Amino acid sequence: CGVSEEDWADSWKKYYKPIKTGKRVVIVPVWEKYDAAPGEVTVLMDPGMAFGTGTHETTRLCAAMLEKYIHGGESVLDVGCGSGILSIAASLMGAKETYAIDIDPVAARVAAENAELNGIDMSGYFIRIGDILSDEKFRDDISGRRYDIVLANIVANVIIAFAPVSTKLMKPGGKLIVNGIIAGWVEERVGAL
Image (tube, rainbow, N blue to C red; front, side):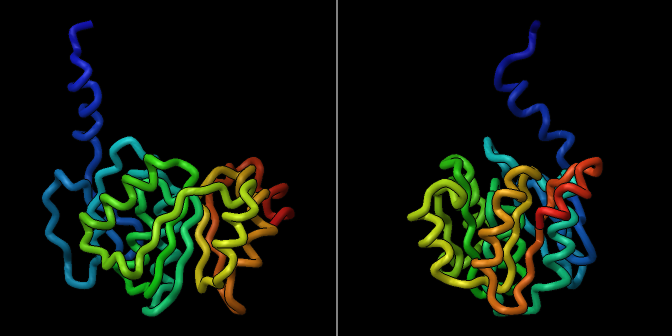
């Protein structure tokens, strides 16, 4: 058809522009220039082959909720971290410890690359590969600590399966931020949570 594979693989980048997710967080593709306003938190992003560009409404809503609950010093768990947008945003807003987990090794690698790109202190940013739902050893390891904020911006059926696990992960008074629920399924999903 006359389009090279390289052109096809990179053509989407011209449509990926800086995205403000709330009042403070702006997701900026690494190839775009962006001058941050005072008080803005910029998350530099190169999603590569991992899921997550920040353009999806669920990611923007989760990032806006993080703005509300991150005040500095929190511990955060990001389940299904994808490209690392939410865990990196949490770190940049002042979370003391951030744990990013995903079942996909590519996502873990991309999240690590994006964390480094954003100058995240890796002594407080931890990436793990595993399935918190089906791998009991991994789940026990992750739930061996408690988190101020637990994020799960993933598909609805995984959120439902994750709901019983999530309460074991949160500190008393902790916050659970989930998204990925299609409007037509809201009643069923809310009942499960």
